[in-house]
Image 1 (cartoon, rainbow, N blue to C red):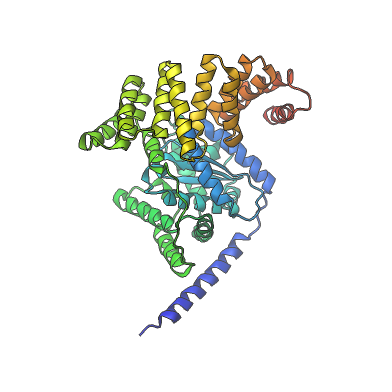
Image 2: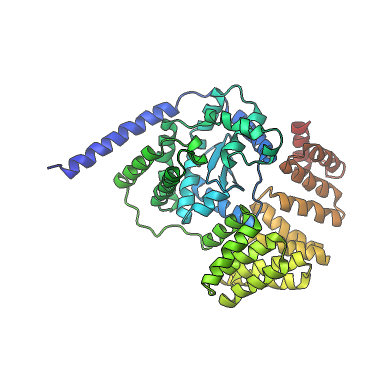
Length: 468
């Protein structure tokens, strides 16, 4: 008869030996310095902006940021400034680039059953950054320059469907190079080991990581011989499942309660709408409400889908149906306010957006940045520039460098006659957009009006040096 205690001990000893081996492998020297890695990461990130479509929805961005930083807060002090982004793609995939830039696709959010599965994916990528795995792979791929790297990573994330795929087959060539950025088994084991620790410390259910790996494994079986994009860079899925199962089994027993996000189902719906053509998502959500006329989420998704199509009247109608089923729901009030704004009915927009904020406060929700953004735009249209600016600055403080918010700041400062700040924020907008010519132009114009030693002037000078 097998002695369970002896079996446990042998497993534990095996894991300790494995962990020590990983530490040895991870400690191999990397000639690239941290600062070089951060600079390379920023350059790849800006090139990647040209290759793939980023999600700018502030609800999705706030969700990803809150989750990402809840995990990062569990790390030892790090030289990396982590930045989290979501890419529009049906392919469930995730990837990290040097310097702390982490990307998830909308396909990850749509596929995940709960926030713990998403957290497992994010923690794994954070672990790759902390171990500097991607820097090691790039050093081995000496033939790839920054533009090529961006193309390869775009191919990894969207499977050849990036912005540049129509012009000249750049993405197709990049796919053939993607194997150069494939993590080794040792790297994957290292990342799984550390990510489980991050998850538990941050209050997430570690079983979420395991259940998501099993989902990817099932996709692999159904798509064979085609390999899912996630597995093109994250190999040995079956071995990883076994390892994570063993680590959870022999590790500390975690019972909860676990960290949760009240709006995760709405985030999933938004991701679903973002990554599909409007007619596809309209048919999907219409079938849901036809089967169950009391399904709030079905009407919510239908309202978002109609808005994406430009059918704002139908959007408001669907969202009103959702409101009838869930009165005073701040998420629904917000979306009604947005549709009214896009329809040009500013007073009704402000009424619904302010009502959404009131109900958010009553429920002690965190500040909702998408509500603030459209409230700012509505105030701007009304001519109340001071109130508009207050909303935009609140968002910029918490979610810096959102391309839409930067444009709005440039616009509102211009309307207020503050030319230096107007040019400064337009410059940042164009830089994030990948339009370096206009970014440089606006940074130079900003210096003509900004106070010489202001933080904005100093940042503008640095950017001019980097972009020249």
